[in-house]
Length: 317
Image 1: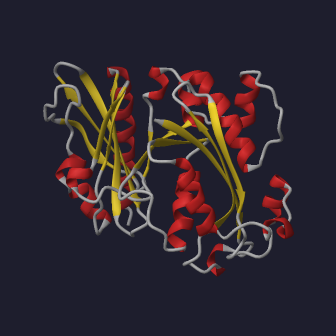
Image 2: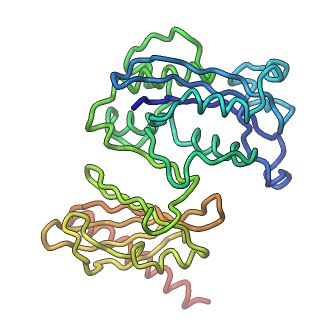
């Protein structure tokens, strides 16, 4: 299997959000760059193509300052569907995407949808988020670093300029080769532009230290937490249904939390993020992770304080 390390550059509308045409993607792709890696993480081919703008004819000042491209140069490019077809043909049949960050695959598919192209996949796409892998595997934290930070960390030669699609894909590939150990590559990501179509296609994956579940879609937000699988509190190691020590609660109607305790493996914290998919349905991303008893007590104290605040607020109304 080859690895397609991809990077995109995009332009955006200068209008305020409320004035934009909702049918148009916020970001129009103006350049696609990529390198193809073999199983030894060696570069075996490259792809670089400008995209002729069709949506936004004025270069946003942020984009212009960052990539130093003029609209006159972009107009020499090809239409997005043509570039995309060439890119997918270049990718081949057996590959996995790798990107620096989590936006490139999302925006690529939004642009494809705008041009009514066939989707990349019917469901979530597994890929390597090299930025995340670098943070978790090398820096040992969740704080995302810039591409140039990682290049400096590994003292990689800066032989081509940053902030163009091909060059950033090239540098991302260099970093991936540095960190591509089996234990780091276990932490794959899933793009959810297209969510699981049904219960059978839902994502359930065990990572070192936590378990992740991506649900199918629901018509209403309330239906998400009402689903038995979403709201269940199982031990992801022995698969026993557990009694909740802290019942599901939410501070903002987007993230929900709960804690249970397994007699064998200890306390488990559950977090559910409810998100709205591109097809307007709601879905859940649920993570389960073991915590210490001290952490459980701290969560319990915080939850009790929050409950008292809510009760006081209701009593004053």
